[in-house]
Length: 203
Image 1 (cartoon, helix red, strand yellow):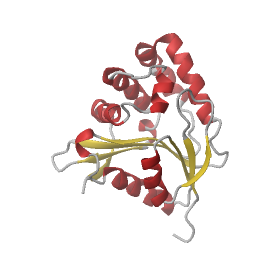
Image 2 (cartoon, rainbow, N blue to C red; image 1 turned 45 degrees about the vertical axis):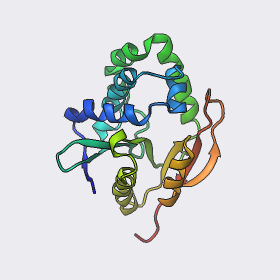
Image 3 (spheres, rainbow, N blue to C red; image 1 turned 120 degrees about the vertical axis):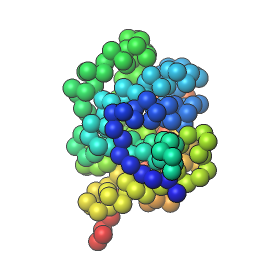
């Protein structure tokens, strides 16, 4: 089994590379970037500022490591009440522009805003991204990452939310207690499903 650890700023390049592998061919990410097949380099340059400006400063990035320390899985969680981290986002704006261009960034913001409009008003943990390196797929990395964080979420009595456009992944989330809510329309080339996991009772 992998070891689950919190990410540090030094882990960003490796974590971004893992997410780029995991999301290659993802329909929602294609909609966000405005490119049917975004390159691995583009995805790395996009995920690095996403990590630095979002969940990482808030302690929400979990890493799955092999015994030799290699990062083979990443889960990105936004804690309750922290939907935006404006200062960090502003500081990373040049990196977002470098990755997407101004026009592409405006398009990405529109797509992300449409997704965000479906998030519940109640305070919750939000699973923004989760993925495993190609070499580690099918080895339980996703389950280990989910289980580690969900145990802590249950201990504090909080609900959780995510979106998924992958039916196989939705089955994994369902096993972990997530329930399908409704599809999200208006995303070019994708129709992700919103999923909600109620707060644990009596934990």
